[in-house]
Length: 143
Image (cartoon, rainbow, N blue to C red; front, side, top):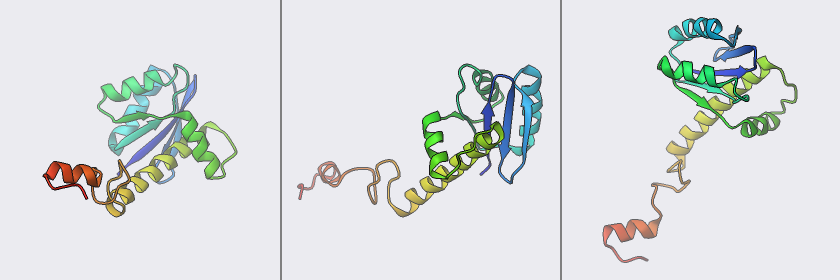
């Protein structure tokens, strides 16, 4: 799996890629064309973007039109994640790397939950239906 975090500002896009590579492009049509050319060979499974007013919209739309998977995430959850990781400094490059870390951590937790703790959507072991509903659906009497 390949993930990319992009921090959006009015003038620039700061990009962080798994493996530690980071770079910056302008947040305009020319910068997005450059970004798409750089992202193409990486074939990302998910690009994570934190909404910034209206400035993330061109990026998200361009990625979707290019067939790249993009997720616009809740900024409060990203800030809470940063605090939990002890990251108090705030720069665009650090924010891009933080978005990348957050999605990698969430993906790992989701995979562990699905494999080791049952249904990741409900937190119930062994399935998504509560026991009473499983019994009702099977026609067996409810214990």
